Image 1 (cartoon, rainbow, N blue to C red):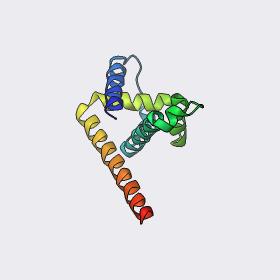
Image 2 (image 1 turned 45 degrees about the horizontal axis):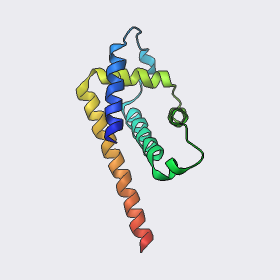
Image 3 (image 1 turned 30 degrees about the horizontal axis):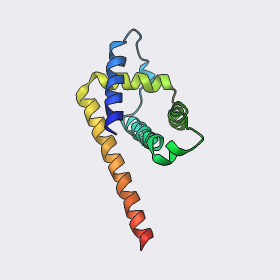
Image 4 (image 1 turned 90 degrees about the horizontal axis):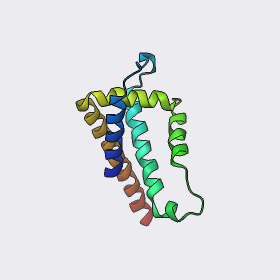
Length: 121
């Protein structure tokens, strides 16, 4: 998860430095949508690095997995990248979004753990 966080920061720095085009404000995503998408991308990363996935003869294409997440939310890769770029300009806002992502993932983890404990009874 730390690697993914560092990767997103790296990407945001790169995207921030490439500001030749202006983002269409009509494509601005709601903060909660960004939190949901980033959380789902972290879950996708977890799937990709899991031992079961690594041992599988059929490799999962990470790019397709990410595009499926964006498709689920009816947005394009360009819209997501533009919103991520805009978000990364304000590091305080970026940090608070990521704190919400971590909270969301923690809640999901707690839900899974409680389901496992009920199933074991």
